[in-house]
Image 1: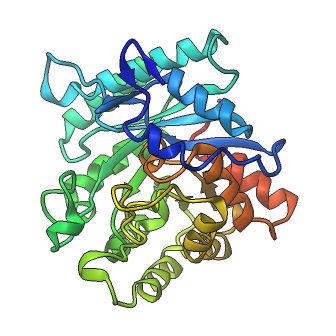
Image 2: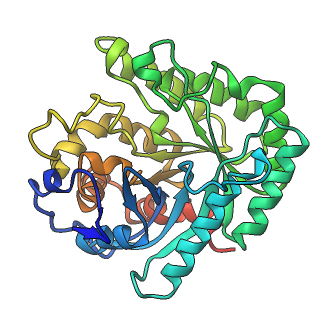
Image 3: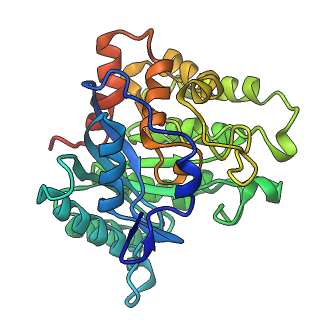
Length: 341
């Protein structure tokens, strides 16, 4: 399927090898707190996202736009170019509000980028985001992912370890907190102690650990006690009441999934079996009121359909109470990202 000749996704033919699944618990309201809209290799704008929602059959009430270095301004001061992404997200939200594409509230909240180490320029960037967001700007994600193994570290990691522990970053986080904005922490599981230290030294900060802490089971971590190490770090982090967890986004870390060698996309049963060890402990340790199920689409579309992902989550949470599900699938995201303001 194409729009003006632009592929909907690079792997559309491969995804077609696994037909859409019938939705489990289709009436359960969902707020997806981690969706990227962008044009990188393939276009994934509101039109493409709306098709995924419709195909899934799940009740996606709203979504939070997650920063992905999309649509930065071409000109202007370097520290303000990232505000272009918020402007883009607001434009997508306006298209969604027309009702032409979907009834889902697109970009009900916006998590953008700001370099929190820039002092007064950090404040200027955040204020510009808030103005551009017209009430939708919710917080910032600044990656601190770093690992000595280049195969793990990848091309978009931090330049050096320990970013969250620097005094400059701490000052920026205090500015963010004073503006009642959240912070999405992006790390690999060996850096969980950094997030714990950050949360303890800034107890008023609203911190979200994304992708379940990105436990890495491939490359130099293959054969190591990753789950035990991850669980120990998560248990310590859970003692910080100002930290929530965005569960999911595990495709690239757990098992190092490679669509080039996989025979077909994952089913929800297979996905639930693989992800369960890194989802259930989050709920047990942090409680449903501090957990959010998230899609990380279209990144995780490399391995599954949108509806398959939500079915997998619903299989994992089948033993939760109705109230716990309400928290995991909608209420926590609404509270953390202030979507009902």
